[in-house]
Image (cartoon, rainbow, N blue to C red; front, side, top):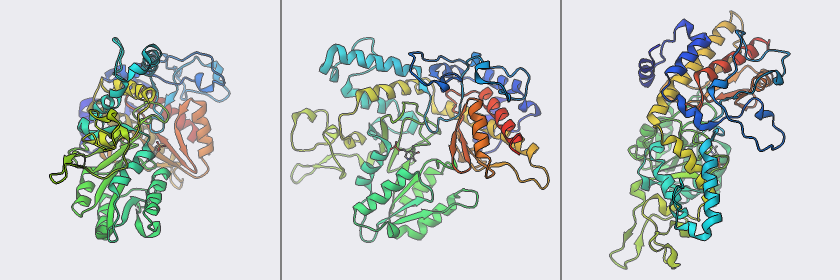
Length: 502
Ligand SMILES: *Cc1c(COP(=O)(O)O)cnc(C)c1O
């Protein structure tokens, strides 16, 4: 199979034709051998079949490499009934859960060690000094440094990115500045099934302004397949345009995996006087974004999913250049800037430590920062970004398009063999078929009653993936550290689980 031709097809929004041999393990291995990003897996520590069962700390951290992936000895399934886990050599798990918590980059330990040594050695001087040989800049400069190294991930100028807080907190801070309801324009348009935290944030902001969520929240409903056509979004915008203050959507819907047409929707809403914000929790580090060029007003994202900075790691926010201006008033010389909830770390570095009462924000997104950010947390993010800085979102997306299409192909093959006449198919993929309308994740809706059996089989096969009760499993083969062989092995274990479930 010609990989670059296949990627080109995918980039046109079409599925490539896989050959008949695509079902065979050797085909996956061939794709891995041709994968120009395969070395990046070496930058990560993946949980192993044994480490997943660890119950107590033992100071051992598993290494992992594709070479140690178990061989299936010519059998159909990686793990057979009756075999126990201890019969297997330790090998990396099949980690398909980057949409929930990315795997640990090896650099994290090195960067954290550097930070601990810096703190222990020079104490408070670490705020303004960095040590030679350290991968880190001074604590003062770390957030800016991480912003600079995130520009390719979100498609923004360094000054449009601020690294701070956590995702939901940033959603609140951004809404404090960008959701300015008036009597006439008070509505927020959202989708039918936002991540609960986003729902709570939106609802509580509306109440905070003394408004009624029943009147101010507008939900866009999907079709029968959990899909929301762009036309539907545009029609809801039209319907509520004159009363809407803010449109707030996820770049990728966490449940269905649908990637929205961010530039088109943004433009359409803005032309109708609506401010547009995006929650990029499932999009950042997953798909290519051009927030600056798309003229997005603001965006927020977390860094523990596809960016791999660790559980609850420090998050990011985007504020478009045009909202970050700080000007001097001609009349009274006071600073003029977009209203926001302010804190001292949003203050310009040149005067931050003067401890004055006048707030003079840093121009750009940095002026929305509030507190002194955790240097430990930033070290972890810095390490995670160092892996992204070895490649590009464009290269990652190219691999991801093919990896996900291959996953889909193998799942469809299972469906083809399992759905005879009169038989109800055991599952369906609810993520859009169009490769340009999804990221790496595929959401598989199982026939009711199958989740427990399938979930158990996946766990026994050391597949780490996400289950959303009652019936959905989400698999996210992440191009940074997942292989085509991982996907093939997952499909074999899944096939076996489906075959033995009826
Ligand atoms: C993961 C996720 C969150 C989690 O928010 P935190 O503030 O990081 O806990 C919120 N919203 C969406 C859409 C998410 O995917």
